[in-house]
Image 1 (tube, rainbow, N blue to C red):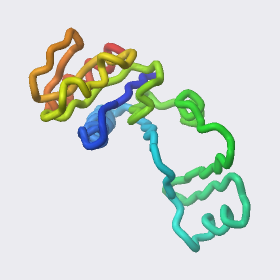
Image 2 (spheres, helix red, strand yellow):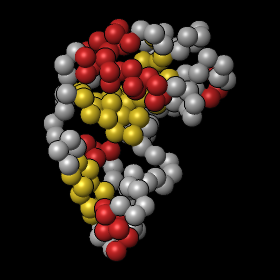
Image 3 (tube, rainbow, N blue to C red):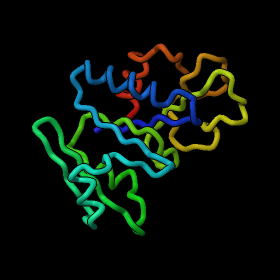
Length: 162
């Protein structure tokens, strides 16, 4: 199983880049999973649906299932947030996992750098396991650099390095 993180500051293009990688790997017939870290509370359930009402009544875990997909919603309450590796254990053995966020974990990472960013704001000097940088602007580093449109080249690099 290959794991590669996509890291960068807000609005750097992380999600757009993750989408491109996921699409590329899927088209190459890989079984792809993704994990997205949110820094804020989020809601995937809709008010007044049956599953929402189950949670509202006190169910700590709800599974909703149909013929097309299923989802598990777990309330953490005061429990610690799950680690990246606990979340990976929830997955059903994908070939590749694209992780957006979790920048301080030990997995390999690609940093997405916005073209007009201040060099002092780059993450790679202070993060472990940054194996590549995606930016269209010139950046001085020994880390492998890619242009934003080089998806196939970056995907092959990820397969080699993870």
